[in-house]
Length: 247
Image (cartoon, rainbow, N blue to C red; front, side, top):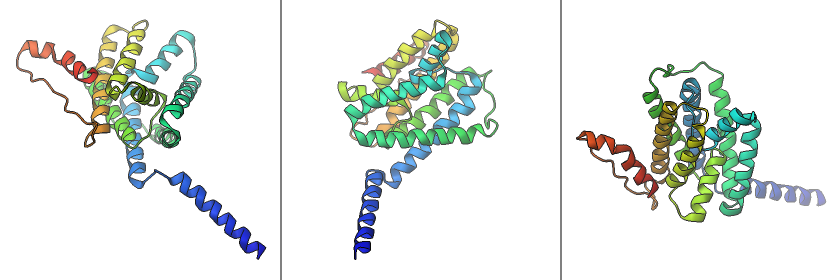
């Protein structure tokens, strides 16, 4: 009798633990996280690492600190993510942190997989404009899918989502302000023409993150893409897009 009661208690504990771990994690959310992480890791390994594109957010900050202070990226990344997740836990809740941990581990797994093989895409170093647009697209779509599932690919995503929670900003505005700040500081060691392509990549990714993470939801909005007919239209294209992102 005692053995049967003990087995019953153990089964109840297992079921409760399993229910807790799986709570809020539907198959659809897991698939979104895995697909998003795969797209993001593929783009960084096949484009960013080959072309040496910098970035706003956490990646750009780590490169900046490594250049000027010699801080290893592995240490800086861990500290940055830890601080951001502590704030995220306070303002976004335990569920967000649980999904964020799953997505972060998934990112590491896909990085490990793609780095085991030679790059699939050709080196686009001689085509920086194409590299910036493609790199930004991979990052934007990948991160957007993970955020849509309620997760985060790193501390910079958690930071942006926390800022949105506290200020009611759109996520694109939080990303653009942090990206502009890091890219401006990166001018201290990176040529301005490379910063220009990095800014284009960051703008592309931010636009896609905002679209992919909100399309079909109440938070979605129409971003007006200006028509290009005259030289003046082309000159005002980027300012017009940035205005749509920040307002």
